Structure formats: C-alpha cells, structure tokens
Length: 181
Image (tube, rainbow, N blue to C red; front, side, top):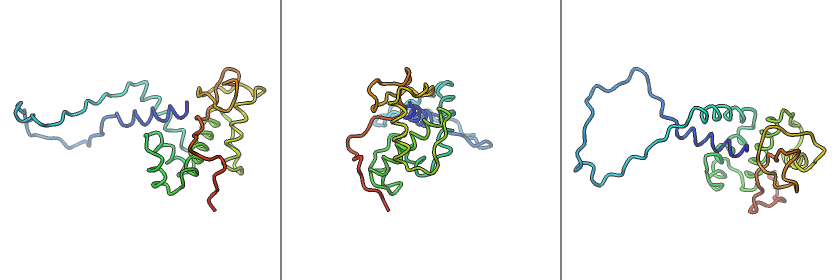
C-alpha cells in the first residue's frame, strides 16, 4: 500500500489547480471565439479536481518521505509520478540495480516507520530489506497494523491478517548486483 499511496499522492498533486498570485488580475474582457476560430484546434483536457478525502490522504503521504536520504526520496517520488527507470537512473546518477535497491529500501523504511518501529541506523540497505522480508514471513511476529500490500516473500500472504509492505520483486533486477565503491 505504500507504493499505491505514493502513486495516489503524486496523481492528486498533478490534478490540483495551479496556485494564483494575489494582486494580479486581468481587466480585459474575455474573448469569445467563434466556431471558425476553433476549427483545427486541439480541445483542452478537462481537469478533474481531487476530492477532499484524496487531498487529506495526499497531505498525510507527503510526510512519509521526510526522514529519508535525499536520493531515496527523489527516487521514490519519481517512481510515484510514473517515471521510467532509465530516466530515474539518469536523474540520480545510479545504475538500474542500485536505484531499484534504494527505492526498495525507502519503501521498507517508510513501512517500518508507519508500523512505529525504529530502523537500525548502522545496518546496510540489504539488511533492512531482508529484515522486513523476514518480518513478513514470520508468523510469530506481532500483528503489523498499517499497510495492505501483499507480500511476495511469504507463503501465507500475511501476518495475522496483515499483508507485507514490500512491493513485488522485479525480475529484471539481479539480487546479486555488484555494489558501487
């Protein structure tokens, strides 16, 4: 659900109306175009303004990336906006596998914090990702109460009825990718 909520927040941000500067206005009368003037023009796309509930969820979601590393936050938001991995890699200057690991780590950190758990500071990204995988697959673990994304790593689909916060694994990314020095 972390990934879905971030994508929804990005969609809501795109649909919000543009802010207007106060003090600037137009005194010219509005021009009425005839049919002949409109022939051959592309119609303006209709903007659907998001509902107040969607805006509230977006505002809540915006706070999730506050404590992340700037590169991780940038990757998360670019992915939420639907950018391709190639564009993300060019933007942040990482290889595809490294960018995917940063993205996965950021989603794990967000999910871990939403469940009111502390993320170990002096551990590697891979350790944190594996820790969240183990937490999703361990049935003795207490119930996780925040997210509803199905865990691709456990066999039962959930811990005590609560699904795993990790996204589905990408088959294009090697688990044994070399690390950058």
